[in-house]
Length: 325
Image 1 (cartoon, rainbow, N blue to C red):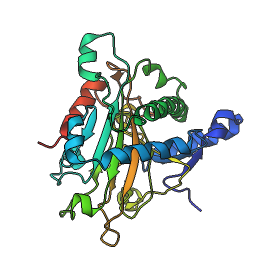
Image 2 (cartoon, one colour; image 1 turned 180 degrees about the vertical axis):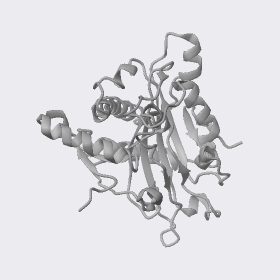
Image 3 (cartoon, rainbow, N blue to C red; image 1 turned 90 degrees about the horizontal axis):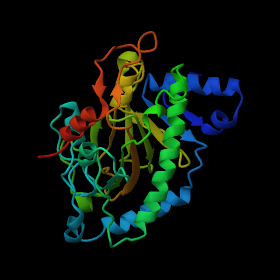
Image 4 (cartoon, rainbow, N blue to C red; image 1 turned 90 degrees about the vertical axis):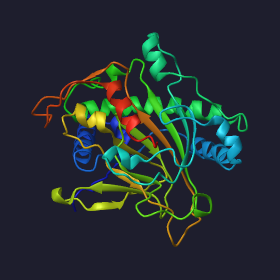
């Protein structure tokens, strides 16, 4: 049997196994990221109860009256509540899709920077809803776990490329990150989908690695693999309740000279045969230290030599591209 396009990687042999086990995992990761740009990861050590408690607290916020949530309204890339109609991720591909059928609570980098210019652009205090005080300590614990997992993954990615383990982590002295709690309610909240409208439109992520904790559903995550390269087009992403779904973003694809693909994906609208379906995802968007110069890894590892780019000039352009209005 052929290897799945989106394999499941157990991190425990990577962290504690022998050289042979580590080499096999590195080869599997390299192959998967060169096709779909996605992995599932188990053995990560993140408490599933913590994820459940965050969802419970976040749902208490999302079900508040709109006038209460509007007190926390933010723009894309900011901190707070993104209401209906705020984002259209398909815009990043140049597609004029209707706005995404979701609401989000969005948080980001929690420590200020010494450079006032960087600080003004990339730091602001997170805005925690007073109506659900338990959300802040839960998210802060979760984000600590995400930072740890991100660095483990980046060391794995460095070795999967045949490079030094710190090839990526050396650029993580004071990284930025984004964290979205995405709420996908049913049609009784968002209404019937318009033609071409999704919970999240087709897109690729913008940063280095995305760590997704998701729920299975008929209106859930789909991943695209190119039929011209033996892919299946759009297909439902594999699901394991114990696993995180990992995909790489545009910055990482560029960094690897397109050896690895930025994983194209979408989230389907509420299904016609289950219109009340409600899902919630916890999405951690890994980035790197502002001012990092991202240069494509040269051949034979890399495939394309992109011009060097400032990581955060690039990220800001991407964030601006999906803002509605």
